[in-house]
Structures are given as structure tokens and as C-alpha cells.
Amino acid sequence: MSKLNLAGRLITSTGKTVKGLVTCLPTVELENYFFSDRIYPQLEVVFDAAKNKTNLRRVCEIQNDLEAELSHGVVGAPIALTVVLEGRPALSINGDTAMVTYERSSSFILGEILILTAVLKSLGLRTPLFSSRLNSVDVKKSSAFRQMLAVQNVVLTIIFDDESGINEEQVRELFFKFNRQHSGMHLTQFSKSNDSFPLKPSVIRVSKSLRLEDFGGLSNKSKHVKVSESYLTTEYILFKFLVGAVAGAHIQETCKMSDDVTVASGKNVSEVLSEGYFDFVESFLTAWLMPLRQDNKHARTGFRLSAQIWQAIALVVNRLVADGATIEDVTSAGLILGKLDYSKKAVHWYNCEVMALDSNGRLFKNAANSTREFRIGLANYFYSFVGEFNKR
Image (tube, rainbow, N blue to C red; front, side):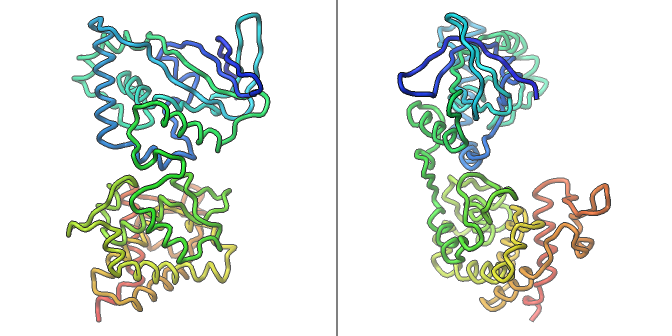
């Protein structure tokens, strides 16, 4: 992968290896030098929570400010962003000018995400938060403004460490530190690095009840689990499981972790869980995980780690309880689905309408048009194995 170079003024602190480089770039060049629309893997949950109405309103306000400043001469401050470079980029110094050499894939814009989103959204470029799609009216209406914004310089502060390097956890800590010290992004539930959200007590209760540490534990650093990691699942996936099991498919799909999710009765999910629904969740998942407890080597194979699988089986629980299933029925359903072969070569996927073989004809994959269609299709398929309870 080719290296990129940025020159500017070096900022150092005595006794510290972390440095800063201050430079400028036209806004249209941002995506050529950085992953400008990147959602950092360790911060997926946080960015999911940031996609709220308050932040959308603020982005629109920033867009209006930028247009007023550039199109109508209104006084405004320069656009400024803060970037961190993961790993150990190279540094060279020539007189008063310093140059940092790095790979684009190591970059993450952690400071002033709403300003970044407003700029990219105005230019019609992909953003880390909200859609940047421009309709024909917007294209005609703001053409002159976009042209002026495209060549507007952005003041960039590049944070890096060419000696000790910056790792993933340090990037995450820098993000929280920056957003504590600078107003802007609305992240009430994530004001500190020890993330909190309304349903977290219920998620932790499930984790402890199921002894998930036996399977590698529960991650709070990202939305999904990679095969290379040791975790079985994440707080985000368990959150979606609980919402789906209690409230059904629509609320499961649309809810955010920062929401105090409510059901049709007006009660929040945690209240419903505390009134007895937790027993259904615990019984089902205990049974579903039993085969893994007996043979843990299969815990990380096939579709077991898939968020869509976990959300789909949650919908099975929701439907069973709605059909009047007992704790014993739900436990039996968990055992049946737990013994199912989740490998990507399992022949039973032939019977699932949202699965199909890949181009090599060896492994099954998602054949649906959307994740929603895939999730609902999986739920219907799984229910076909256990739906006899409602026929008694």
C-alpha cells in the first residue's frame, strides 16, 4: 500500500513521544488522505448511539453556518479537525518543516465529527454518521456553495507517535477524551469511556447468568465479533437480542443502544424483563449454548458469531412467548436450535429461503436483499423447527 506524506508545523511536549502536526488541506482532499467516513472498529457502538436526532439537527445547523459564511460573507471560524494515526508513522524534519509519512488505513478523524459530517454531507460525500445523498433540488440549489466549500482549507491537527506507536485502545481513549473536552456531539450515554446505556444492567445480568466468560466473554468495544477475537458476543448483540425477544422485529431493528426502549404497553424493556420475561431469555439461551459448553471448539465456527443469527433466535423467543409457550417449551426450543449445525457447509441451509450457495458452490451465504429480510427469513426458518408448541 502506498504511503502518504503531510508536511506542517510540529508540536512536541518535553518528555512525551506523542506529537502533533498542524497542517492544511482543501476539504475535497480529505478522503484522499484519510478514511474520512470511517467508523473506528472499537467505537462502532458509540457511533451507532451518535446517530440521533440531536446530532442530525446540529449537523444541519453547521451546514447552514458554512453556507452563510461562504456564500454570504458571514464571519466564521476556520474549519478544524483532529486526526490520530495508529501505529508508528515515520517523521522527518527539515528546518521548521516536519513531514509525517503514514498509510491511509491507519488514520481516524476523532475530533469534531459533526463538523466533518456536515462538510462531507454538503459535498455529497460519504459520512461516518448520516446519509449524504443529495437530491436533484439540493444539487441545483447549492452548487455554488459546494464549489466554494470544496476548495476551502481545513486546519488539521495530526496526532501520532513515531517512537512508541499508538494502539487501538489509545485511539479509543483519545476519542472519549476529545469529546469530553470539546462540546458538540451529543453522546449522553457515552460521556465516559466506561460506556453505559439504559439496558446495560440487563445485558450484564444475562452475561453473568449464562457465564459467558466460559466462552470467551462479552465485548463492549465493537458491535460485532471477529473470528480472530476471543469473545463470544458483544454488548450490542445482547442488547439487540433482549429488545427482539421482548419487543419484536420492528423495535429490534429501529432501536439504538442509547434509547430507553419501550414496548407497545408503554413499559420499557428492562421493566418487562424484571417482571418475569428474563426467565424466558435465560432459559432459552442457557439451552442454546449447552452444546457449546460441551464442545466449545465449535463456538467460533460458521454462523455462531453472527449478529443476525442472535437477533433471529431472539425473534423466535418473542414469537414463542406470544404463542403462549411455557418456560419448558422455550427451553426445549433452545436445545433444538442449539444442536443445529451452524457451519457454512450445513446441508439444512438448502431449506432456508434466505440462504444460498456461494459462486463456488461450497459455502452457504446470505441471499436476502437486506439485513432485515435476512433476519426475518432466519427467524421464520428457525421457528419452523420449534413451532409445534402453539399447535397443542
